[in-house]
View 1: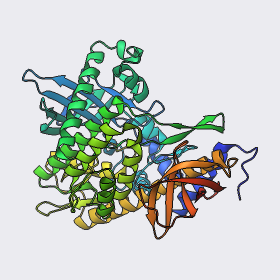
View 2 (view 1 turned 90 degrees about the vertical axis):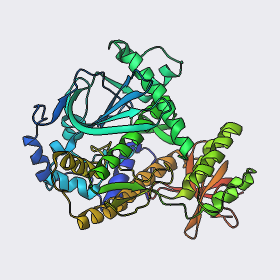
View 3 (view 1 turned 180 degrees about the vertical axis):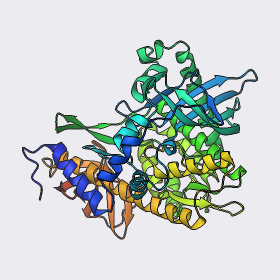
View 4 (view 1 turned 30 degrees about the vertical axis):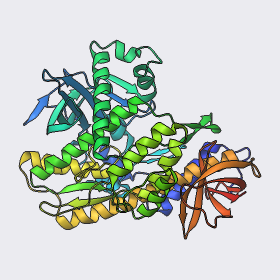
Length: 489
């Protein structure tokens, strides 16, 4: 049993993260052979073949303030007919990480970067993901650009994908940009010093609002979640602080969704397979119907994303204070996403939450392996070459990526719960308001309200289900295993 008194919280969590990764078949470190490959890698900025030069455009990145693996840049342009041109530039990781290399084999094993509060375990070596393939400020980088035309109503009208050389004019973060465009702060200095960038980001904000409204009109689900992350004072956790959502996050979310739709459509038009992200119709739709009925709304007996979104929108307007709790319940009941291959001419599942049929992951190749696979498909399709993967290989990769993503999330959740256990270990016996987030044969889980921490109900779980509000008492914590145990009061 780990004793946390007088020990660095960061060191405890780092040790637990590494153990959890290894136990789930994830590699926390790179082999000497993988690191040796880095010596021969250099950014390619030579304009050869069908590569455009768009360094003149007002590209910028918007991400977390501490993000160093920057995958995307965005820029927008108002068109005379009232529509808009939206461009998303995505790091061309494949230009440096070829299929079958040692670095690629490591990335394929983990399939994702693992983000824990104590340490980040990148999918690619840091010299790649935070430097050579990162779209850093004022660096010229080769990218794949998704160039889209958006109607005045927010609808994606047409798009194209091509390779382009770009340069970032500003590295921005969600908190700063969000506070500015929502009116709480002045123009950030990083924006003000680039002529025209302020107006461009304002245009991007307006465009994201229109796109979000259009998607929700089609039945895409609008959620609001609350996540608490540890705040360190040196190597000790000071508190758990809630992550705030704002319109800057909405800009990137909306643009990435459209870019992922556009890349899937591009591959389908080229008669190429697509490495799709799907969310199947929820198996626990009947419980979602029950929750809606508890709020005086009748949903259809069969899964219907449009009806569910209408209900969610009504509840957000009626009870904004508790909307995050409702969102959490619905998210849990929808079930997880997974990867699947869409072969030309064959039907496949869509993404229930986004209300789209053909959706790929393509916008984060520094941190997600499926995106790197999609890029290789895109580049071969653009060049008129054959599909770079066999059908059986793609199907195997889809299953592997789904499994490893699940493993990575379990590691992240375990470390997050261990951090929460460190915060709560001296609060045994205290009582909290909670909402039930999971109910199955393997156990019942709740999330307490302040701070937002999830744990298992050990005693008194009989008869409660997802979405129920109860009062619980903290009865035990286990930092090593990430256990937080409650009993129903």
